[in-house]
Length: 399
Ligand SMILES: *Cc1c(COP(=O)(O)O)cnc(C)c1O
Image (tube, rainbow, N blue to C red):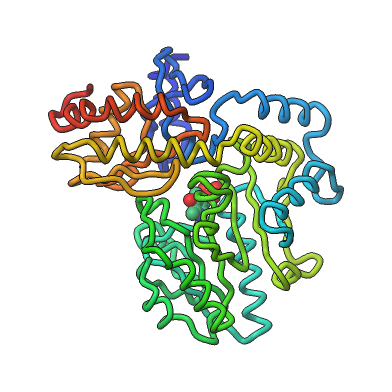
């Protein structure tokens, strides 16, 4: 079917929440994807920081194919080897402790974190939650109530939870907002959906200290930032500010849906039997995929690759002098090209015309979150083409 026909049929068959995406993707290989008309693109989005190994990675293909042929689903009435191996592997990466719950998505990982925090609050007379303005934690009602971006949250309120929002990156404001009645603080290590906005150095450490001083749980939403995206397994490791609860999803399954919530110390025992569950959570195929992702990141040195190629990307963008480009934010292979005005949509379109998929994340910010296997040469091909892309966007042409 042609791309044009698919888009027309999509528009009729689907709810209008996504709009109609501009490109129909037909296949991928490594960091390259092809659309329905056979045009090739360099994928610098990776399905929103998800396809960590790129497309069609042999390790992922083999793990998923073997598992789906052996046993695709058990429910949680039965256990299976891949989920145990994966939980143990995550614990190992996190210093040997923590107890794990597997979900199917980011928002569900946060629902688990939130239910733990509600239980903790109930046991200790703690009644409110703190999260950051402009933060993003997901679209289900609990995670949505923590989501700081008003345009996403407010149409669906009021919410049952008392959530207080503080300006992100302001440790003094956080300290003022958190007291002995606060059940938990939810923060991203850098705000992803807000435009890949890192906090000032030391903010996560300050948050850890504020939670230690007041007894509030520190919940790190690492759904976008973890599994190598910033050059370390987890972004909190840059400050060594280990949370009480950690949520993961996006890059963990390399394209297969999986989320994880990990709680440390006594918080790992907050749920009693029957308190939470998921029919699909931790299913064998997603667990096998995640194991392949973690093994490949380790075996192929992809943490170091994300750090090194991320620097090449940032330096390349930094070196461009153009009236549309203000600078670059972020870490590792998690970057935003910051524009001087609301040009992101035009730049995204011009980049696509030039054969690069990037994401107009904010009116003035372009997200670059490629597979962790991106090569230096591929990064340079993008930064080399970017001045002409910016010119094309400025001139209202399409490449
Ligand atoms: C993407 C994201 C979520 C939501 O994940 P879904 O899988 O879309 O539900 C939550 N928090 C952060 C930080 C995210 O980037």
